[in-house]
Image (cartoon, rainbow, N blue to C red):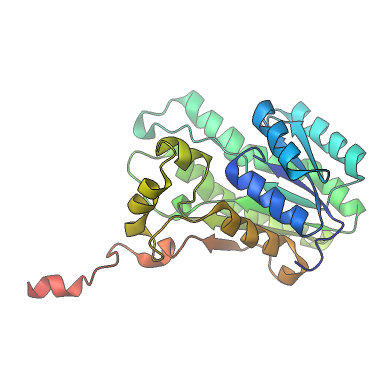
Length: 262
């Protein structure tokens, strides 16, 4: 991807399958990456797999002190920050029964954590003449999903946060976009399916025009595009990487009109 070589990125949630795939894609394009994640064991293992252009820094994005230490560690290791990918996420969600504490946790990690990471990275980006940010939204941001309130609300807020940040930071040469994955073979889907990807694909098939889950690498390629100079005129956008989930609509894949003639 044009313009990525030599750049420095922080990927929050870097210990997850999607976060690691994003880091791997950026490194393949010539960037150096700090994986910021609360999971020390998985984060360190991911950085080791990625090699010399990766570092891991244990970071809880709901703690400002952790964020500040991550920024300092990135500057020390690689000299500055050009890109931020806000992939860190919690899936805590009990729908209508969710407690105030659960609401606060979901919003603190999924939304406020992303905003605080950008706030902390901004001075470093300005020093280097600008930068680019990709926030992880979701197809859940625009669809009602039974039993889920916290996660979709937080992701809908991320889309609006992306727009507002794009407007206010444009004068500093900082582009801000979002990516909205559909069902993707990810850490959470792997856990929920018991590691059975074929089962997960079969469940996802009805909801995606492509008839399958997305792959972490496919999402990572959209992220790298949005960070790259190929997207130099793209900001404030929410890019769907969802296998047609958002295009499909409530009628699904079957011909609905013919039901009137049955």
